[in-house]
Length: 625
Image (cartoon, rainbow, N blue to C red; front, side):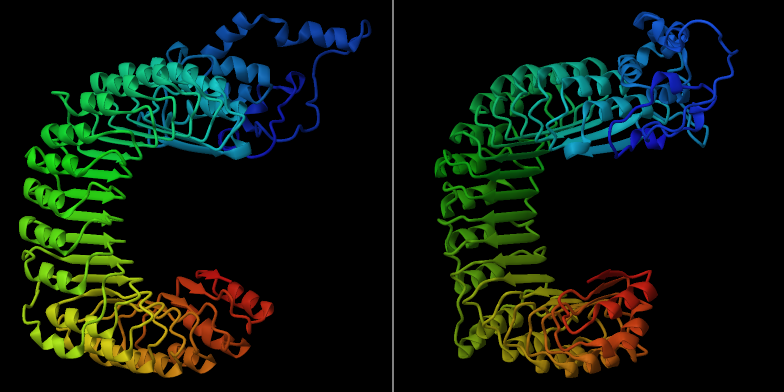
């Protein structure tokens, strides 16, 4: 049975004449044909063989009779019959689950009845109507299909999806991505048979229109999650049908559907029975009106994502915040929306009193005033992510941290070009101490350097996780200020891409935080040598992940790691370390006994035979080479 459902070869089926009821129970349904089964019928002296076979073939029966026979067979026997021919498979896939005589006898190994426990995914050339029909017939005898994903196929049509609908009424999750040949007819069958459907995901399905989605909405009242992306023929009518027919809808995501506008979203959000908790709206032709509706009626929303809404102005975001309807909102993400300004952000922060997480990307009109407004108004804020917000400066960041609440735990800044160094003497002016902050991430901010890091380190002495990747202007002096002022003990430290750091930094990490550090990333720190690995080997007993890729470490450094009796390393990456040669083989074997991951990519001084020996000896370790 697994061979039928998980078949990966060509669609070669057995000929009807090779079918034997006793042998099919042990036969792989979709393999290449075996030797013809021996026939025990008496020897015929007259007539042509072809005529005799024709008279004795079960296929002389009309399809109606075959249908009645097939629907009375036990589940496993139906699966065996599906391997005889495409004709039989087609007939079997046309039987609805309700028409099967043994529909209530689906058992699994623990003798408990299960419905909808299986998951199947078909992609590309392997996704065909024959495959879907086989899945529909095969899974019925093994607990029922619960989740199906179809991706990137030009061969799947409405026929295949209809076979799934008829044979798998237990279906709860359906994903269709980049399948142009499935249209409304297939969704009609799903709507007619699969009333337990809870999750629907449609992406790049140009043949599906409002009629198909409306049918699903009207007949599948258990829908809780809907995701629509790049479906250019879906519009307001189908969204209105969802609003009326899906009272249990908790999450909806709509991206790049140009026909979806204010009317559809207004009906969805203003429904009196709405329990919608998560909404993601991206690249839609909606206006300020939709945001006003969200702000007024989104009382059950806890997570909201707004991205690339070009027709929404500052007024829309301001009204959304001042409508006072988003009292339950805890997570807000806004990206590439020109209407995000300091004024609108302050209104949102005041209106969303339960806001815990905020993410702002490419908000070009946001400045220090907006950041300060968020810090003062959002008293429940725990996490903030700022990306491509180039008007934010270090002074504004310091001011925001000073006014943050005692619940604030995590701050992340990515590609914020306005973050520039302040002179070291100005660090004495920074007196506030932000004891609550545990995680600090400043990545790919080219003007951010050691002086800026010294200021933030002094303000935030209880950091546990620090990510400073891509700060190529950072020096040992700046990192040392972080290490020396930190009181809590660093657990995770990412310094990848900090090309000016040397062994001095790593030695300080081992000395000051060796008892707490668990993850250390030094990828691209080309000045790091074996001295760093020796310090790590002797002083970091809890270290589980170490990345020294593209550094200057050699065989001696690997030897120091392998000889350590304190190290509990699980993941090691030495990718691109050209000075590591075949001499490291015994050390890597010794070290690898406790590893679960080893990255040896682009280690050009390691021969292929050495890598093969490592793979053979470290069979429990996942080796990239």
